[in-house]
Length: 102
Image 1 (tube, helix red, strand yellow):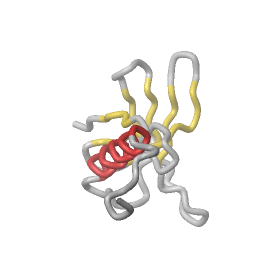
Image 2: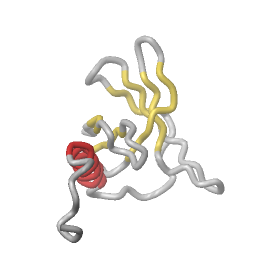
Image 3: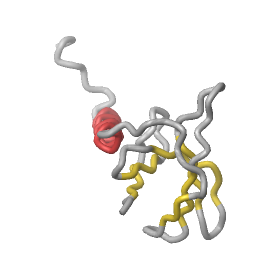
Image 4: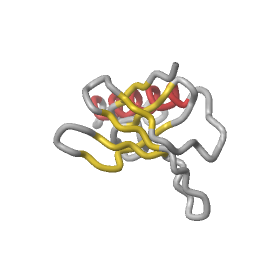
């Protein structure tokens, strides 16, 4: 069974990132009043992954009909969480000098 988790500030640009337990990641494609469409983050010019997920409620996810066109990256959920944590800590200590500068 596939489980999904939304990571706030999980992308490099500080946006929401949807990660699943297999190692695939998704970004927001479109927001509706009662749903959110997520698309796979593998979006190179020559090979766009067609996989999608629809989020109906806060914790209700439905995978699209298309499969991923690339292998999964295990540990991507951990990477997204660490990235979000580092960005949050950096915002809290915006004007504090680093240890190298002290």
